[in-house]
Amino acid sequence: MKFNYYLNGYGWAQAFIEIDSKKLEFTPSYLSDAFGDLLRSLVSLLIHEEEVATVVWDEEPSGVEWTFVRKNSDELSIKITLYEETYEINKQKGKVVLHTDCLFIEFIKEVVREADQLLISNGILGYRNIWDLHEFPISSYLQLKDFLKNDMITIENSSNSRPASYKEERSNFKQELHLLHSLVRG
Image 1 (tube, rainbow, N blue to C red):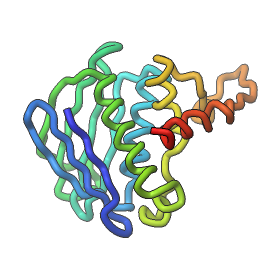
Image 2: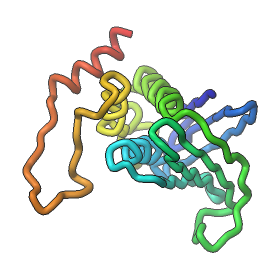
Image 3: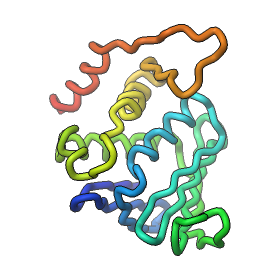
């Protein structure tokens, strides 16, 4: 398995995935938070133990829909569907270009490795300057790095859902910096 994602111009990215000897390329635009949505969907599958997560990448006017189904703790189903345009995507018949299973941890490793490269190549502010409307998804990135290091997510972000007995939760800034520092140390 191989996954690449890089910013190739103001508001544009280039993405590549290879699974089971099938190779696909995409050119998402800033109209969707392509990389951020991808990272957030993986965190959602881990933390909330959601079974399904869907991400749509705008390619102006076409679009790419990624559907992730967590089959069990180890296996992830990935389905990639192309649409002629992203407007009212649920009313269109798309073309499925990939539907396969892979090891969930291997996909996370590939995506986090690529996130590492995005940070090294562009920086946090540079990413924002090039991608235009969206910040680098630092919180989701740190959660995935934490998962790979500790085999669990210890850096929680409970802003998406607050239970009735909600108490304010803070993260450990030193732990977050340590994860970022480990990237710099290489």
